[in-house]
Length: 229
Image 1 (cartoon, rainbow, N blue to C red):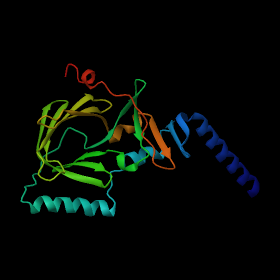
Image 2 (image 1 turned 90 degrees about the vertical axis):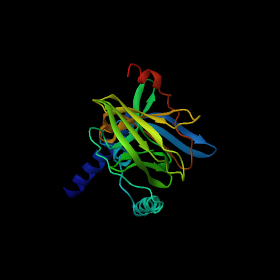
Image 3 (image 1 turned 180 degrees about the vertical axis):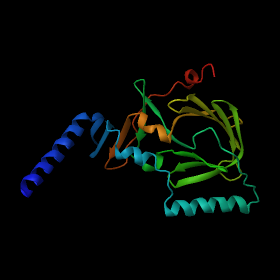
Image 4 (image 1 turned 180 degrees about the horizontal axis):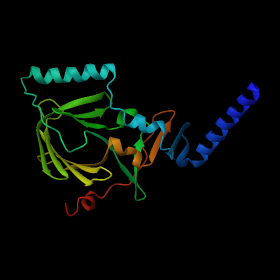
């Protein structure tokens, strides 16, 4: 009986794995310069990749780097003010478009997730070295679905920049982040979704046994997305 039960469990596991693989939609796979890569849509809403994407926790060295950055700001004599951040999600992930559909995305390079988090005193970005704080100078709610943030970049002695967060879909918590950098620099735009809404969108995973270029998504039409706003 025990042997039979083990056999049933093994068969069930294999069947489920094959079924999941059958449902997986591959966008690209193969070898490039001897390196295997694959890019696919995971249809499983319980996929482990959603948890990876929305992991905003600090590892030990992340905490050490973050505290060191804040100490540097305070040692310069800059004042760290606190603001009441209400009515807006505090954690955001990148959102992408492909063939007129929205997707969230796991890049091959874990340092390019580009998470974004708001605290009462800082805008936190994520790069190759982990999270870094950009101290808030002001936070303002401009309208029911528009927020304005002024913050100091991570770069030393850099001018403050303005970030306008346009909530373009309140139900699905989709937003356009408009960075106004000042001077002769053009405005920069990002399409984002609140971290607690990522499971509302299919997820694309990019895997490689070595460094490989990102998947080529469509470029959002930000002018159209912000039309009449």
